[in-house]
Amino acid sequence: MKVIRINKETLKEVNSLIYDFIWKGKDKIKRLALINEYENGGLKAPHIESLIGVQRAQCIDNFLDDENSNAWKSILNH
Image (cartoon, rainbow, N blue to C red; front, top):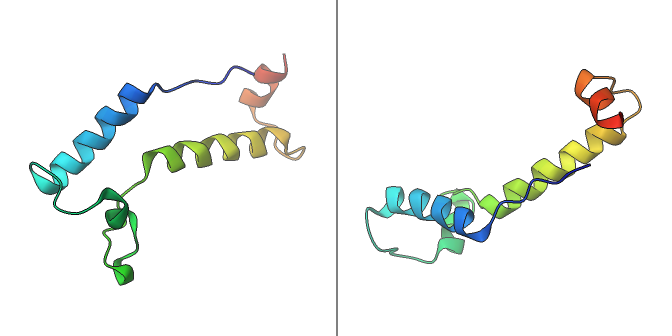
């Protein structure tokens, strides 16, 4: 199975777009603080690298699930 790689420049650009939207300029607090839950003073901002990892793990889990018989799975098995 071929893994789609996302280069670091693309990740950096996506993060810049998100945080430029939030701050409209230079960051006011650390980005890791924004990722926290509301109760911890964060904004539940997305952590892009983690989201990509979760999506990959879910895809592998679906592929390995014997009860899952979607068309895309038969294409990958071929």
